[in-house]
Image: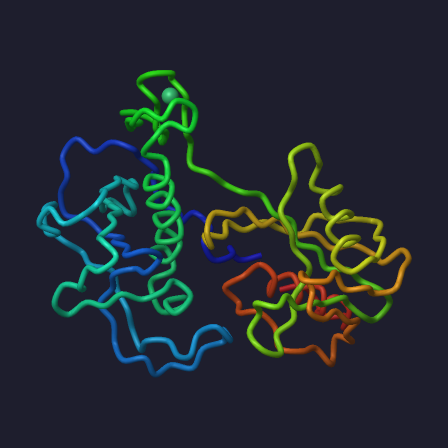
Length: 297
Ligand SMILES: [Zn+2]
């Protein structure tokens, strides 16, 4: 199986400190928008949330470490990709892009930006968000400090450590005979369906989470839960862990407020699906191919 989007690139070495800042790829964010040089928005998109993709896009590669001229709210060293330094930074909400550059969302840049750069952008946006939201200690309120060797902010007063957050969430594709169960949440683009998903609660295993989420969202009991794959998901800081499971009993009863519609779909008559950016699509495509008797890709 080829790597899913946002997987750590080959030839990337994660580091926290840099002795001699030099020429670097820069992952500069304004909120969740990335600073890129890019062509016109004219390429059709497979993502119902994205109107069009740019013809091309690339990250700024800068020789001078001070190219943002002191405007950055924060600057984080990410590490080294193929021998080139990678830095992340955040500019204020109202910041105009430097000449020849634009702000663009990650979903729009999928398949356009270099794959390794796209993956590191997903990492960078999470680290910038973590740094922004952990400036003060959650226990005593004192200002935290970055640790010189580890990706953690530490409270000098009470020593509480704040590591980057990753929120595990399961995704479940329920299989019954020649059909799969797909559902839509009220915030999905019109017509789009996907597999069920939900966050893991403290005190439950991933398998228990699958059983609970499927039960809560559509009122169906499942068995034979099989691991499929996992994906880092930077919207805003999840780890998606996907499973396939078999229907055991129960008819679909969509959970009010959470599930707008849910149905059994034949694999030859699937509705609009999520973009290939997400593990949801990989999961649905893989199971559909298996049900059609095709070899997995
Ligand atoms: Zn503290």
